[in-house]
Length: 109
Figure 1 (spheres, rainbow, N blue to C red):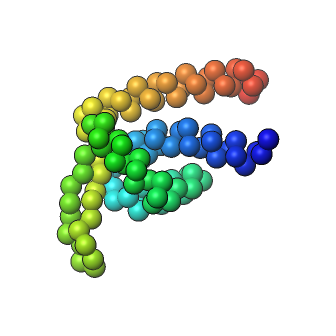
Figure 2 (tube, rainbow, N blue to C red):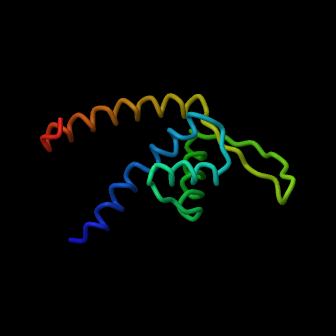
């Protein structure tokens, strides 16, 4: 088995949660979301982010607004909907349970 592949799969598994968490803090332009995730060592490219944003929007968790740009086309700024905030809270609770379970099972508590 390739450790890099396993690490990539682990990151993919939490990516939607991390995107929702970042957008739960502030309304953001997608490149700002990418920057925040890169700062957290979750490397994401536009080709990965945009389909996830669309899927989360279609599920009712995100909304967006257009803002004119001084240097180019208008920009979409995304934020959580009330349904998205509730969903994020459920994911927060699930994450806490998962961290506890993994810590106990790996002896890292």
